[in-house]
Amino acid sequence: MDKRCWKLTLAALLLFTSAYAEASFSNHMKDFIRAVEQIEDEDPGLGPGDVLKMLRKAAGLNDAFIQYFLPDAEASGSELPADLSEYLRKAVHHKVLEDAKEEGVVLTPDGSTVALGPLLLGIEAGLLSKTRGRVRGLYQLTLAKDLGLSLRHGSSGTNLLGTDGCWDNLTSPQVFTLSDKPTLLTTAQVNGGMDGIVLGKEVSANSSLLVKLSSLLNEYYNHQLDSRGMDGAPRLISRRRRENFKALLLPPLLARQVVKSIDLQQSLAGHPKMEVKTKRQLMAVVKEGLKEFVHMYMVCPPIISRCSWGAEPYRGTPTQLSLPLTYLFIHHTHTPSEPCLTFEKCAADMRSMQQFHQEDRGWDDIGYSFVAGGDGNIYEGRGWNWQGAHTYGYNSKGFGVSFIGDYQSRLPSQHSMDLVREQLASCAVGGGRLVSSYIIKGHRDVVSTACPGDAFYQEIKRWDHYGEVKK
Image (cartoon, rainbow, N blue to C red):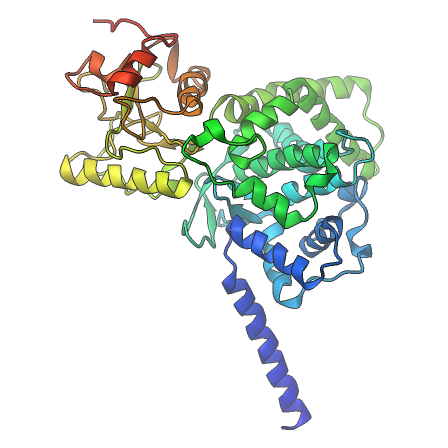
């Protein structure tokens, strides 16, 4: 073989190896963790900080703003393995394309989609913290910078916050497409920012947590629930991201961090120091804009969209509800009889129920407005805007929320009940979908049925807002 032919063969082999490496890893958090483990295994001498720096370098997360808080990634002497470099660059570098494809995000085992950039920046900042529990730049690196950009543009009244999307495949996800007009801050970025803050704080307060980056990510994202569901789950898992985030970051503190972030960006760009009057005006804009953020991510529970659990299309023409409604009707599924404890199982249960309602009962769609899983999520059925088929005679007057499982002789987990009674209800009231004086009733209160089971019915009769049906 001559020298030229040998070079062509080598080039083809390298191209094939790179393509194979990308194809063998999907955009699932489990695959990303597997790639991190490969880096750690190939060079056992690398510490978690070294790995984080390599990932940051591969993704190009090294602008002046980031370098203000973190070391220059280009100064890292370590290099990623060639077969992983392109995969990790795409996995970590966040961007939204013109066709509404969002890159730099992964599907996690809890069913949420997370941007890896802010997550990894938060962990690295926590690792470099010199003071226990106090992390320099944590909020700016993870959430405040992007939130500030969104809120400043949002002052015109345009909704520029929180677009979510759908994966092409739930088992081996490759492409994530936003469901609505792309926004300056997507839900995946918010999830990544929240996780980055939570884990950054934890790593700073307890450095022994971060022996290996892959171990920390595994414990946080891949925890398996036991029969107690979320009631028996540890505190530091991704399913608890919203409650952990709320415990760490009150809205006034977040507002100050957003303003500090904007001020720093202007300073790094060579602009004069922001005047006091301008800063006050900016703070007013940020505080007003944060109301939507607080409602979406600190009041409302995590809601898995229809496309995320694999729903079939609605059959026919849906009837739009006239909001706000008066009632919240509580159901149980009976079949499935056991609470689901993973996103995969809950999503499968949702598809099974939709098929039963459409094929066996001849309904246009799954009957419930929402369904509470035992995995820590609420699942969207017909949702907030479309009339369901859950409580005969009252479908236009209330939302029907079912709990997966048979609760004739036992109760759902306390966590699942709180998701509905406290968070989903507050979300509905705050969003103008349910009147503040709403009434909770069991399915059996208005229809001849055993639903939602004897044990559960006795429980909801003790809930606030349980009352008489208005005639």
